[in-house]
Image (tube, rainbow, N blue to C red):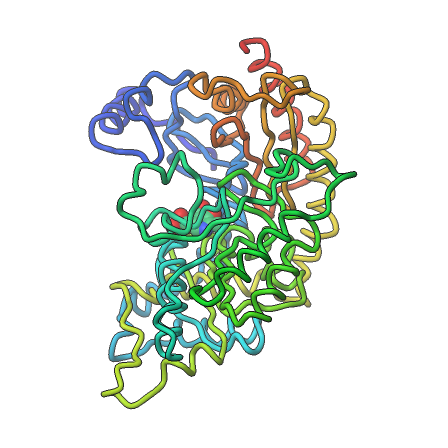
Amino acid sequence: MPPEPLPAGELQRLRDLDRGALWHPFTQMQVWPDETPEPPVIVRAEGNWLVAADGARYLDANCGYWCLALGCRPERVERAIAEQLQRFGHSTLLGISHEPAIRLAARLTELAGPPLNHAFFADSGSEAVEVALKMAYQCQVLRGHPERSKFLALGEAYHGDTLGAVAVGGVDLFHGVFKPLLFHVHRVPPPHCYRCPWEKRPESCALECASALETALETHAHELAALVIEPFVLGPGGVIPQPAEYLRRAVLKARELGVTVVFDEVAVGMGRLGRLFAFEALGLKPDLVCLAKGLTGGLLPLSAVLASEEIYAQFLGAFAERRTFFHGHTFTGSALGCAAALAALEVFTEHDRAFLKQVQDVTIPAFWKMLEPLRAHPLVGNVRGLGMMAGLEVVADKATRANFDWARRTGHRVVLAARKRGVNLRAIGDLVLAVPPLTITLDEIGLLGRVYREALDEAFAQA
Ligand SMILES: Cc1ncc(COP(=O)(O)O)c(C=O)c1O
């Protein structure tokens, strides 16, 4: 049944309340009320589409911030949540246990395979990263190496917004102001082919980025608790894909030096790159894996850290030995979240992973075919990414790759122009993102391509 638009007076009341009471994340609230067209107020969703209070429909090409992997209304996940709610909505994992968490831990570890035999739950991607950092460090203490208290991370990394995650993050715009509050992290420049920190071109590249990471590992191994990395693509920090071999060299070197490897798969896991776990494409497993976003199909906040047998074993001992991992949240292993994740995993993996095969064989190629011609647009300096995760970098000058004055918000102008045309996008600075649900249809991909072009044209005319 088509939605009834809210009466105009009620919509205005909601807008007033939005402006008065709701503080939006990553948003300059002073300019928020002045946007044209106004930010839609979503009241329902259908398929891959959001429906606003005024009846307007938006293809959600940001998919609820990269988490609605199975679309806005994944029927089986919704059903699983409703059924779980009939049994119980919440119970703790402190002191007692519950069925959905047990089943999900067993399923995730079965799918990840040994040695990733243990699952620890939290509520968000940031919290999963906090858990992994604390686990990695305490593990070193338990191994008798309390001096191994530092982390190695990449420039432009993004691991979330809680303080530990911010410390390992490397996006100055987001993280700079908090520096006095953060622990020190060793950092290597990101492997960024479009803006190579070593000023190399493909023909002159000798993977200096990988060598720099290896050197940093060698230099600091004696004091490192872990290497923390978003595998294959740095996400919110710029959708920066890593050159082939970069990750393999990083993991092999860390292994050789006994440095724990943490993969932050919050963005790239759960089908985003066409595989359930991003590490499957590497053929090597990290010691700790952080999962969130699409884990529940994106409907409920739940995250997980998968830990290797060796790490888990360090935490075992008599009660008085104080080897316990003293960490947990009120909603750790939320029953509703676990039920949602079990249903989402069923969709991802049933019929020999047919859903993921379709994503790999059909959706991802069509997505990149749609993006390809946008490279020629006069406003677009670079189109990059991997799987169902892309970023279009708008530039003032294609030859010099110079960006626009940041305050002009050229990327956001593209977003507003797309909004007029019924597509919900998001930009980070001058990087216009394309991270749609994995359920996006070929027709919707075609629509996305048309709207990108028109929105870029409109922003170019204003530039
Ligand atoms: C790679 C990565 N790590 C961690 C996070 C933080 O996750 P959350 O927003 O659920 O805290 C994000 C969120 O975008 C992410 O992309």
